[in-house]
Length: 290
Image 1: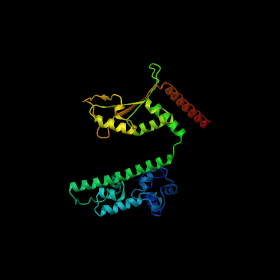
Image 2: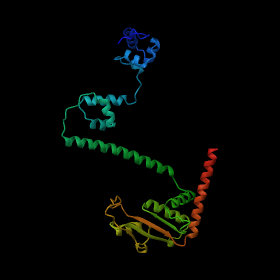
Image 3: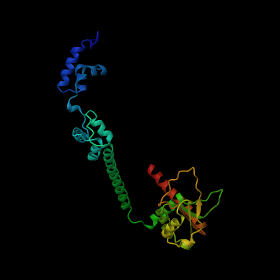
Image 4: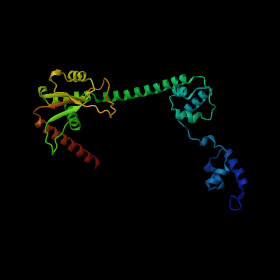
């Protein structure tokens, strides 16, 4: 296309010079500065069809994987097989090999589905191994727990999960409800640290009426190491047919409620400890900001 006026009037001549410079290995910026082409649209048209020199291409960390994926695709491998072999996502594989011919189907739909399932299972297994490794490393980092550390953890745990006194409903009593056996065990260890006598602790189960109540009672009584006959009356939650429950199965054991009798004084101390922790933490944060 010719331009009637201006410095781009001899477009074809300018294009010949731009193409020659491109083939010499110059970058777009170098060509632009050499020919004094300030308009990007004009520069694009001058270099249309001319690939950039290799040295201007940015290195890609996945170039090796991309090359392997293309080689495997040319051998007739499916996306699922390539995914299992290289551990790449199907999205990446698709973008790398979409210009290559599709291999002939050599398997039935069922066989292809089985391969895809194995690939997904392999991926999930790797993720689970990484997940468990992270958890184990974090657990090991805790090491031994001092009495003070347990004390502070217990105060925070109670204030997060335990019942609290309200100005409109005075209930200065230590009551703790949870469905996690590890949380219950930690709470009992904390009460033991505070030298709360076990005889002062009362237990009762809160569970859905359709669950195995007897098995749940036995589970919790074994956990807290008390006779099941000492449990208070189990509270049954009635079933709502419109609700789709997810807390079902053998692992569902309801919630265990622990109440410490004669605990008004202990409750007041817990509340004081909690605000002491908050005050110390906010003061430390304030010092760190200054």
